[in-house]
Length: 247
Figure 1 (cartoon, rainbow, N blue to C red):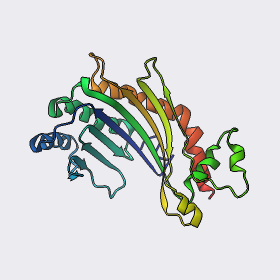
Figure 2: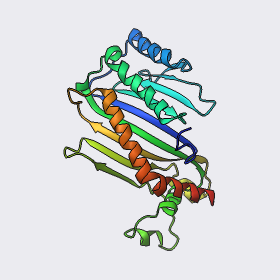
Figure 3: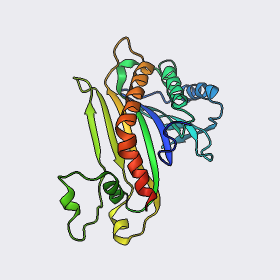
Figure 4: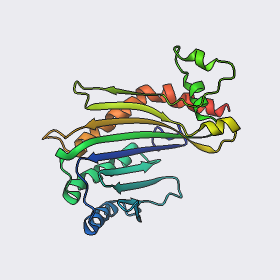
């Protein structure tokens, strides 16, 4: 189990490579690529086409833990939900990126953006926005707005993005996503849905000549994990879990 498994209902590690040029869509090319992925991970047996141009290979989702990979028009994706370890998820992403140049003709020149995302989902039936405000606070500048007579929070999704290099090409974002709307707040009728916390490390632009996609992904994954450990676990995830447990 990952060290993050107990922090949320679901934890996942995704990799996305956005390209400047459309990826191949020929039948033979797509099948050969996914066959190589399946050869390494034989339990990935479900293959389908989504939206006429997006191709997906995934494991059975019934167990709550599964791998998936996708080829879209201008994006190569890989993910693992509730992985047995961080290394297991990154191994899959390395394979996808290692295969991409040979099977999908992906060049380091055409990288628009490469990112690694650590995601945490909390199942909660209620006002997600109010929950976030209660668990994390809204900051001194906005506190009085929430204290207005009859006030109910209907939109609160805090996020922060920083650049860690002078060119602003490498960025880290901590963000939240709520799934509560004003109608639900007005009626008091809520479904149990996922409240998400994301940590995304992203690099923009072509890779350096001596850098592979695997090398770049490994650096981004390390950066994302450091941010989770130092800025997210105690500051966001545990307060959210505690607040939900008291509801």
